[in-house]
Length: 624
Image (cartoon, rainbow, N blue to C red; front, side, top):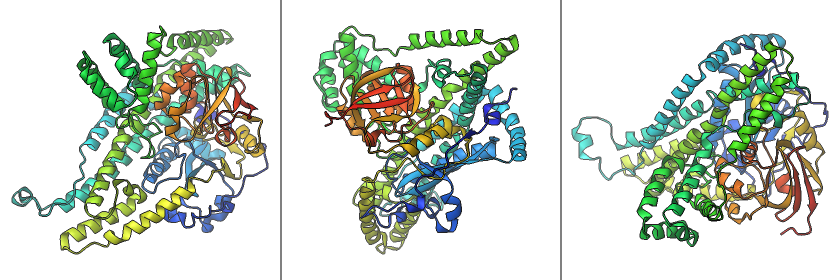
């Protein structure tokens, strides 16, 4: 098997000698003193490691954690800190890259890739990598089927976990069954099982992901060598147009729109903007039962779709907050009544994929080159869907259910007078939860009021105030020293961190008007008014033909892409969700700008050049 790009791609060299602000020089916002207490010691910068930590590049992971982390929500970042890194460093291992380190700074997640630079070690790692990766590539379809089975089983076991307040007396059936284990044991076991289930799915998350990026990187490198000057956009055209699972929820909404028109329920939907009122009106209407049956069938699992990336409990989920899909439903019905085609432009994308692939294949000089090209593009198309499809099983279906289970646990603490609100559970780290649960067990077992009844409320109040203050701080895109080279594949493909990105950030004044540069993620050039989205609730303010400007999009925002003219994001690379979804919807996009949401205001007239990766602010006089 040909070497993969993860083995042979040369390091991306950074010519810049400048550096960003030292992470140790970042000031704590006034009123947020003591923020470090919200997080475990191992996630913080430390004076004992100053020399090492100060000389690394740390970039803000606004893709997964755009806001200050809740203490409990750090389970998500800590999970992939180990899971993703062990795949790159210990399981495959990638010859030129180790894991990705994490630090929390003023509540925000900063990450730093570790490189392998010793040639002997690179060669040794390559030998292991080729054997292991080759096995997965050669058996991809079978292993993927096994992966889906594992993921679904993990989800089913998560559904079965229950949290209930401790009873006044242990139930008689527990006594007379002679089991010897009682409600206290079951509660603690349920919590341990919940955490283990989360970490298990986290491991599945990355089992095949790096290899998905690896196959694409291999194809990308072949194209760059065979066709000097070829753009990343042209390469992505050759693997686009695949029916990935993340489009299924939006497709279900389209189907419900078509059914509503077919059953004569379109006007009922259009005049009821509140989801509850809409459902009540449909229930009372002729043929409403048929539509509601289809709706219920579509909801599980497709409405377990987070409006974020699934890494924080705050992101609403379609299942519990259907405003976004119902808004899209009305939009699709209006389009259908106007005679429009509401399908994704898949045929056009597939036609372009076929044409571009054939054109470049014909440029190759030998049969051997064409054979290599055919094999690489076939592999890239085969593994590419996993890069996106795993997100539905992991970040959306599983993680959305996980957050609901944690809320059920919060109800237990409320019932035992530790918290005032179930949401307070998220202000404790998962290790603290174990201690608090044991405190509950002690008080229940001995009949003495547990300390938790007076201990947690003031601490939670303090943590809420600190986090609210941190929310008003704007994290810089990067800190520390740019590396001599960048070799970690996720860093390049997902976050879009390259020497060019770093040099652009070093030279940008985030407060200045004018021009921003990023990754040319989807072709086309559009001029329009900006709609800056920093909170999910702002999505409902979007007007037709505006340009979406955000830190990062989520897959569940797909219905929004029917309305906007282009997309711009602070973070992301060619394989970020914003880039992929823009290409599949045929919208111009520039990602990885670093400063878009802080330098552009809603109402600004901007030009998005998705061909060159440039965003220009043309007029700020109309900002709102």
